Each structure stands twice: as C-alpha cells, then as structure tokens.
Amino acid sequence: MPGIQRVRRSAKERNQDRPTLSLCMLVKDGGPSLQKGLNLVSPWVDEIVLVDNGSRDATCQVAAQHGARILHMAEDLRDFSKARNYALEAATKQWILVIDADEFLLPGDIETMKGFLKNPRSVGYRLFRYNYFQNGGWFFSPPACRLFQRHLQVRYENCVDEAIEPTLRTLGPIGTLNMSLHHIGYTDLTHRAEKVQFYLGLAETASKGNPENHAALWRLVFRAFLLNEHGEYGEADHLLDRFFAMTTEADLAAQGTLRGYMLQTRGNEKEAEAAYLDVLCTKGGHFKLSCYNKLGVIYFNRGDLEKATEFFRLALHRGGGVHPFVNLGICHLKKRELNRAAELFSIALEDNPFLSEVVEWKRVPLKNDYFSLMQDTVPEIEMFYQFIITKGLLAQRHTQEGNVEAEDPGFDGSDKSSF
Image 1 (spheres, rainbow, N blue to C red):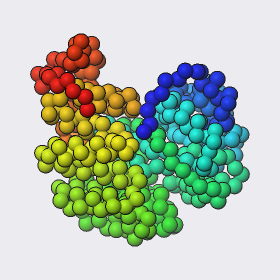
Image 2: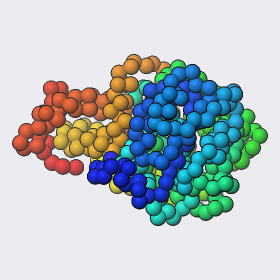
Image 3: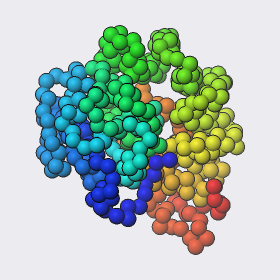
Image 4: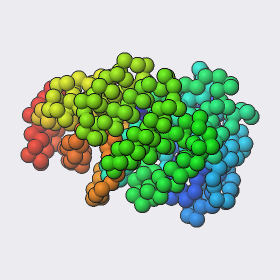
C-alpha cells in the first residue's frame, strides 16, 4: 500500500544510481497547485517538459523556476494526444512520467517508483488515482498508465481520453504499481462543473467515432453516475448497459461493481450486496478491493458493526487504500474504542496526507452537490472530520497509559487496546 517513507539520502544522491526520468505535463493555468506539485516531484526527476496551452497566469514562470523546458501550444485544444505527443517528442530520458497540474505524487512514492525502474518487469506501469471533492468526499479511480519507457513508436492515441497503452503494448507487458496520484481537480465547484460538461461532450463525440474507445466509454459511465444522482435512473441504466455491451467477460468485476454502486445509491442494498458478493468470486483486482469496502458500508448501515469490521479488515489487508482505515476507525469510535480509532486515523493521514486538506474543503457548506461519497465511506464520515480537526490538540494530551483525551464528550479515551 502506498505510504510515506523516510528519506535517508538526498534525492540527488539516490538518483545517481537509478534510471533517468522525464516528467511530461500538459498545463493551462496551473495555478497554485502546479507550484505545489512541482515542489514535490522536481527533486526526483531528471527533466521537466511542460506543454503550455495558452496560460494566462504564472504557469510558465513557475515551471521555469523548476528548470522546465516549456513548449507552447496556444490553439483551442481538442486533440489532447497531439499535445501529449508534443511533450514526448521533446523528452530525452529513459522513462516518462505523466502527471497534470492538479495531480500530486508523494516523495516516498516517487522514490519507490524509481526503485521499480531499476529492474523493471514491464515497459509501463499504471497508477491508481485518488480524487478529492470540495464536499469532503473522495474516491479511488481505476489505474491508468502514467509511467512508461520512452520509445519512438510509443505515442498517445484518441483526441480525448488520450491513451498510451495501445502503442505501448507492442513493446511488452504493462504492470500496475500500488501507489496513487492525488487529484484535486474537483475541489473548485464552479471549475469542476465546467470541466465535467466539457469532457462529457468530448467523450460523447469520441465514443461515437470510435466505439472501442473504452476510455471515452468510461466517461459515459461517469455521466451515468451523475444521472443516477439526480434520480434519472432509466437514462443512467441505459448508459451503463451501453458500456457493458462494449466490455468483455474480463470486465465482469467492473460491471458488478458499477451495477452494485447504482443499486446502493438508490437504497437497494440487498441487490447491491448480491452484486458485490458476485465480484468477490472473480479476479477483480482493484474492483474486488472496492467491493470488500462497500460491503462493509452496507453492513455498517444495517447496524452490524462486527460484520462491517470484518469486511473493512479484508479490504485493508488486501491493500484497499485509505477508505478501510477511515471506515474501520469510525467503527471503533462507534464502539467507544478511541485509541483504536486514533491509530487507524493516524495511519490514514500518514499514508495519505492530502486527507487533512479535505478538512478545510469540508468546512465550505455545499448543498445539492451531485457528487456523493461514492458509497466508499460510511454515513458517519463527519466523525472522522471532527476527530482529525481536533487531532492536533489530542496529540498533546496523551497520558502515560496511552489514553487519548479530548474536549468533546463523545470521545472519552476509555479504551486502551490496539486494533
């Protein structure tokens, strides 16, 4: 599971005996997030190639401060592959890492990544992605290939939902790294709505022009989710069936997870439970991990904390990301077992420090926000926010026995056992 590792040598020292890495970015008005992302990743890469699509802010100045080679493509961008390939053509190092201005990698994960590249078993690697929302929600996206060997014949395809895998597969296998990009592109509500509509329009066009473009079809699944949130179940099911018709038996885990999610959001938890249990009988990978967690949420909603705890533990021990830590911690809070909850929440925050930033976004009151928590967290998620808001105070109140005291009367620190 991705986590923060202590860096005993400087990034420069470690890079001396590792394969070289080019960071390739496509940016327009990157804003403060670009500065933050480059601060994290630039010490670990050997060059930065940034294609600027007509930025009106300080994007180019920020990139220049980090020694980036800046290329300009100012036209109205409708062909994202063209822009991505422009960066690839300018890159000179052995490996390519592709991230956007609103995505971050943790230094410990970058170090681990470069360790994989020393003795690679694949020509490219997929990374998971955590997406954050201003309403405090977040969800785990399926992995996408963002790390691959530089090669003349490896180029992106498709105007939108650009894909590198079709050409990369001609060179060899593509693996998956158990680490995440942290995506905060949905935290600004107005920008997010515009972004969603823009990409959905392009995806509709792309999927009609190329029915086998699965990346574009996934955009339609996203649209189905939005319709489902608004109660337009018939149209949502139609889009989902359309996606299923284009997938294969190898995608059964994805189908079951998506169908279960739709049912769960409609309150049909019995049918959702059956769909998730079916996924557990497949080689579902990431989707299987998600279903363990979602089953835990269902049992939590029924008041069966023991069964919920069992499924959250299964998700946790199989590398299911941060959600099981948060959900399991809330189960222990419900049982008045504060020390267990404190340890689990601390692990979640250490493993994914961007969760602490969600607290600030959560303080912004939003109503009728069509992005739910994607059924990945229990309804009492507010207990997590409340707890970590006071975490700084709690850390100073540890007693010699290891109890944690809090000013909130709901947290009495009575439990001393470990999880």
